[in-house]
Amino acid sequence: MIPMSFINPLSDEGKQIVRKDGGDLDRIYEENNQLIASINSIKSQKISDDDYIPKNYVDLVIKRIEWYVEKKSDSKNKFKKYAFLFDSKITKFDVIAFYILCQAVGIKFGPNSRESRAIVELQGQLIENRLEELNFNRRAKREVVQQVMNELIVEDRIRWTLLADLISSKKISLQDLVLKEGNIILDREEFMEHFEEMIKNRQPEKMYNIFIGDRIKELIIIKMIMQNTENYIKNVHEMSNTVEPNPTLLKIADEISEALSKEIRHYSSGFAGGNAEASPLNAELFPPCIKLALEGIKSGGRNEVIVLFLTPFLSYARLNPSVFGSNTTLKISDVDPDLNVTKNEIIPMIYDAADRCIPPLFDDQPQEKVNINAKLGFGMHSDLSLQHEGETKWYTPMGCDKVKMNMPALCKPDEICKRLKEINPLFYYLDKMKK
Image 1 (cartoon, rainbow, N blue to C red):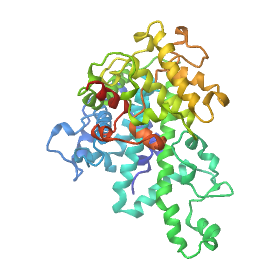
Image 2: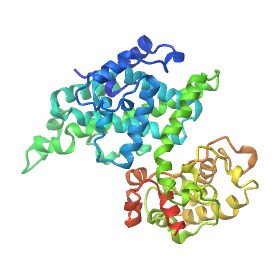
Image 3: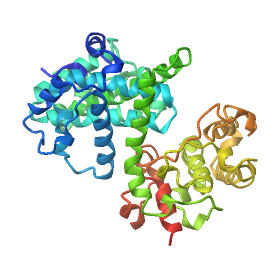
Image 4: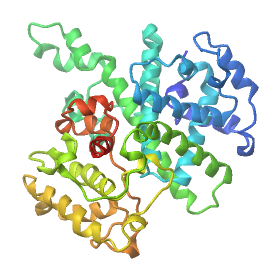
């Protein structure tokens, strides 16, 4: 039986592992012979190069990151050197590595950071791939999925409102769910009870497999675990404000950030992004998605496009285009000391795009001006003032994978997008700038 904590480290089973075997943080850099032995016993693991094998908990944390960034750059590669990540023999060590990872990022960077968002995505992709690895044993897969779901959702009747946070955060779509009187239908028998007589000229069993089957259950648990991971990082961050941060976790956080930056720097070093300096924006060089956003959104999703997507892109493209090629975390005032560029160049472009929306964004949602300031790092205030800077983080530009997932109408890749492997719209702009 696959341990439930292999899929959901935040389960009661996972928490028990941490309480029992979490150990001393000061020893997590020490060589762990049990971990090494477990990985060496995995038949599918490539062990010809000793560097592939994590020697301790911190190594395992970093290997998780390395798999994630390599997977993003080459999604079709099976990466056999990371086969150990998909074998439940490492469950105990994997669970502890997960908690180390979340605690380090939560303490050092907080829930709104690039690092936090990457860790949440990493965990979702890891679960998805682990479930795919179980395709050879459908029965075991269904059992563990049902176990995880039973712990995540304890109500007999699953109201769609239970997933409201996931729906509002776009981690799951209401259109993915089959509903009856506001209840989510997941059980086969319940589906037959409600819909069998309504289905004509098709086999109800096949319709169940098409609309629900294993796919929706797996999607729900993946998205719920991602949401819970995000919540856990947030809780860690809030608690860290009341206690002295552990220096070991702060050290690990720096290693995590460095590992996340390696693949980004690999791409950015090839174009102007490696050493690009701040310069006036040239809209003719923008990628297709940014050009569409600047034209205004004519349907739903105005807030997300203007606030979460366009605002970070324009601000970094103008003020700190080499953000992904540097380990230095900057504030806007570091590159725009008096905020003149931000107020006179960047904000007007954002507001113009908001006004082109239908209906104009600020007509019915004027509070989004405050949210724009927050994404620039100036807290939840109506004025853009240096005295508020640092109350929130300056959001980095959203990657192409998130654009495709959350704003598919904007994603119209051209040849340059495909050549750059659709990593981040900022790379497109930097690539065009160098020509």
